[in-house]
Amino acid sequence: MPVRFTYKDLQTATNNFTMKLGRGGFGSVYEGTLPEGTRLAVKKLEGIGQGKKEFRAEVCIIGSIHHHHLVRLRGFCAEGAHCLLAYEYMANGSPDKWIFRKDKGEMVNWNTRFNIALGTAKGLAYLHEDCDVKIVHCDIKPENVLLDENFLAKVLISGWLS
Figure 1 (tube, rainbow, N blue to C red):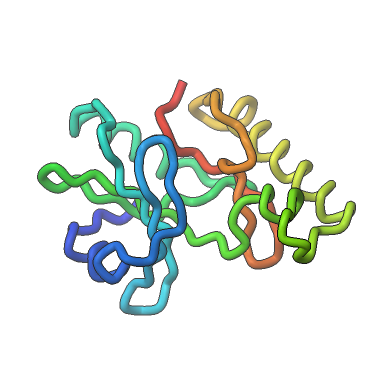
Figure 2 (cartoon, rainbow, N blue to C red):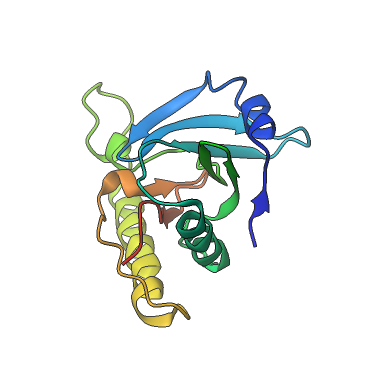
């Protein structure tokens, strides 16, 4: 089960939400570090249109799913009007920045690309076939596949489940 954080915990971890990593469909994502050094990606949800009960039920489902190729939900905050999700930090971000480089920076080789595709497929196969609660992702795109420091691909389960 994911850790229940206070809003203050995540506000402190993200230095008052100043280290923005990006923006998704349901809100902005910030880099954070817990006092013991664990790095997180904290998604601050906006306009989700769900009640607290539905949010917590979804957190319980996502938090109970563990697979090598799925981004792990570390914790959450449901305090007042604040709904936040704290995921494991993925150092290399989404694969699109490594595959479709426009700045002439280093692109990943074909073997790494293959492993990214394979890891993504394994994560989706787990959700669709092997997970106790079968989940259809419904929003697979490069931004919802993230790469750790070793370029291991993990599917992000964010947004609302089907």
